[in-house]
Image 1 (cartoon, rainbow, N blue to C red):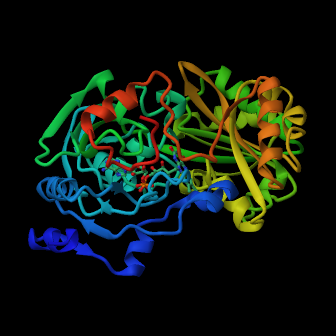
Image 2 (cartoon, helix red, strand yellow):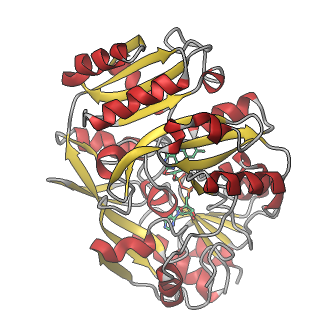
Length: 422
Ligand code: FAD
C-alpha cells in the first residue's frame, strides 16, 4: 500500500496534490540568490497534517517503514531552506498541533504547531509573556526551536538555546517511535537542528512576568549617531525587548509612514512604558528626533526587525543579498564594514550572545556573483566581523553533538536528509 493510502487509512489528513505538495515544500530560502539557484525543484511526494501526538507518531512510523525521507514543517518561514525537502518523501506539517497544554508560573507546555503570537496571547491571559520570539510572530514554536535563533527578548535572554527551552518531547525516526523527554542542557542538539535529530512533539518553554511595552521610533541624520545612541542605551542597561538601527537606504524600503522618514537613519525600540521618558531623553541627547511613541508601535517595530529588513530590501530590489553579521566593529566603523561588499548597507539588532550584549545585524548588498560574496566574507572576517552565512542549508554542528544525536534518533538517515553531515 502506498504511503499516502496507509496514512489516510490511519485517519490522518494527507494529500498528494501537486499544488499542496509544492506549497509544503517551500520556505523563504528565496531571500538568498545562492540557495534559490541550488535548491531542488522537486517537491515532496506526500504532505500530512497530524492533529495530535498519536497522529504525529503514526506519520513518522509509517514513513520509516516505507523508508521515506521525513521533513517536519511549521509555517515555512525559515530562510535557509531548512523546511525544503532535498530528497522528496513526506512533509509533516505540524500547524494543526497548536494546543497550549499548560501555562504555569514561568513556563508553558505546548504542541509544536502553536504560533508565537497565539502563545503570547495565552501567556498574557495568565499575567505573563513569551520570553523570546522571532519577528515572524505567526511562525510556530516547533519551527522556531528547530530552525530559528532569537528575536524580541534576546537582549535579556540571549539566543533560544540559552535557557529559553526547559524540555522537549521528541520522536525518533523508527518503526514504533515513543516520546523521548529531554530536559535542560540536553535539549541543545534538538535546537536549531532543522528536525534532523528528531521530530518535536512538544516543548516546555520560558515565560516572563508580563510588562506593558511601548514602541519608540527616532530618526538620525546619520547611521553612526543612531548606532552610538543604541550602544548608550545598552550600556545604561535600559530595559529593552527590542532595539534596531537601520541606515537611511534601508529605511527607504520600509512602508511609507510619517514616523519613518526615508532620508534619515532610524532607531526603533520596544521598552517598558515606565522607561519611555528616559529613553526619549537619551535619544534626543544623542541628536535623535523622536518620530513617534506608543504601545501601537510595538508590532510596527517588531515587523521591521531582524530579517524583515532583508525581506523589505528584497521586495524593493530582487538583486540584493544579505549576510548575518555581528561584532563591535559594526557600530565602531560602519564604513569599513559596508566597503566589504558592493553597495553595502547596515541594519543592527541588539542581542545577548554568549553572555555579551551588543549589536548583531545584517549587511545587505548587491549580489553580483558567489565568489565575490565569499571574498566579502573573508574581508569582513579580517575586519573582526563575525559572519553567519545564510546561504547554506547545512546544520551548524560545532562539537559534533547534533550528528551524534542524529545517528541515535535517526539510524537510517531519513530525517530532513542532506541538511546534516553525519
Ligand atoms: P519552518 O520554516 O516551517 O521550519 C523551520 C525548521 O524547523 C525546518 O528545518 C523544519 O524542518 C523544522 N521543524 C519545524 N517543525 C518541526 C518539528 N515539529 N520538529 C522538528 N523540526 C521541525 N528567525 C529568528 O530566529 N528570529 C527572527 O527574528 C526571524 N525573523 C525572520 C524574518 C523573516 C522575514 C523571515 C523570512 C525569517 C525570519 N526568521 C527569524 C526565520 C524563521 O522565520 C523563524 O526561525 C521561524 O520561527 C521558523 O518557524 P516556522 O514555523 O516558519 O518553521
